[in-house]
Image (tube, rainbow, N blue to C red; front, side):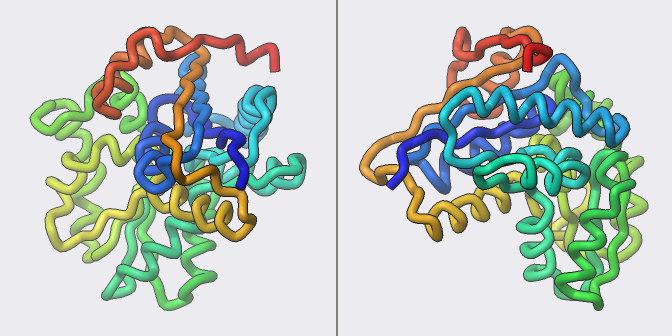
Length: 271
């Protein structure tokens, strides 16, 4: 039994999809979430810049006595996970491998789509993992660079003409390739679940990176006998690198609880 908290980080709001999944899958665990809202989005950055940001994010989280870190960011998972894992002496889970395992398990026609940030698509990490798991899978990838800034600005609700127009432009060509499974390779994208599902239709199964990484963390902690006391209810602490009020407003809507005055702004450049 290990009651130390789990650290979770993302470039902004997207990692809240992992937080919501963790609360459902591991309700007894304490969570410390960091959203790098001052530097969002990560998706168009160079690998060197991403590694610098990710190292700072990890150093901040490690100022707490953690038992594990979940990288709730597809961009960092695809570009920096091996380096971060080598540099740190605690378990670090990313989103790529567990998400690809789920996609391979659910596809019936072996045609899998993947949407992510430009950096994640450029890395080829999802494609490489899918091919490793099942060489017969055909992968169609599509960067969706406008999704993250739109989500960060609260434009993710069905009926919003801006996000629906952008989603159709990105997703209709993917739908027309005949895929039956679509990986949401950025943890912001499940905030667009209803919009994406509306474009792709009922014949395409959506796979959430945040949810699958939460299941992976549960397996890892169970194997290490590092789960918290199951009789308790875990807590969540939220930290951001820009205005806490802006984060709290959207986070409250998504997590369906009042997070006013619950987030703390920190200076990430100190780490």
